[in-house]
Amino acid sequence: MLTEFGKALIFIILGLVFVAGGLLVAKLLRPSNPTKEKVLAYECGEDPIGPQWMKFNIRFYVVALIFILFDVELVVLFPWALVFAKLGMFAYVAGAIFIVILFLADFYLWAKGDLEWVRPQPQVPRLDEIVDRAPLRRAGNADAPAGAAAQPVSQTD
Image (tube, rainbow, N blue to C red; front, side, top):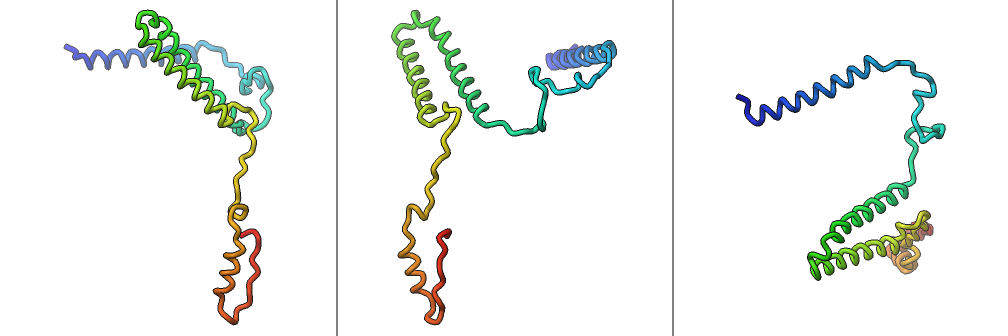
């Protein structure tokens, strides 16, 4: 008598046998006549140019992720719309909160600049622009030994 685990194991083994058998039969029956055109990578009808591991702009992925997030959030609104009339004011408040959060996220992405295709380069302030080091340099030279010559300080420190 097989236990439930034994039945599951037999089911998994039969599934693997069917998959392996289908792949083996397909390999035996299909014609094998590769040509130069057939072994090229498929690039939506375009001829592939350049290396295979070229770097893509990260903006493609960011825009795709933003689209998926907002698309999934809108899919959640469809069941809400179906039960909206049955649940009354509770459904209205829950949906309104959800939509407000959705718009806040959209405005946040807009303000952050993630919806712009070409982002401006960030202006990172340098310490020399913020802090005046002249008093520090004078104080550093005053602490030098009496016989030491004053060392000129470069502006790149």
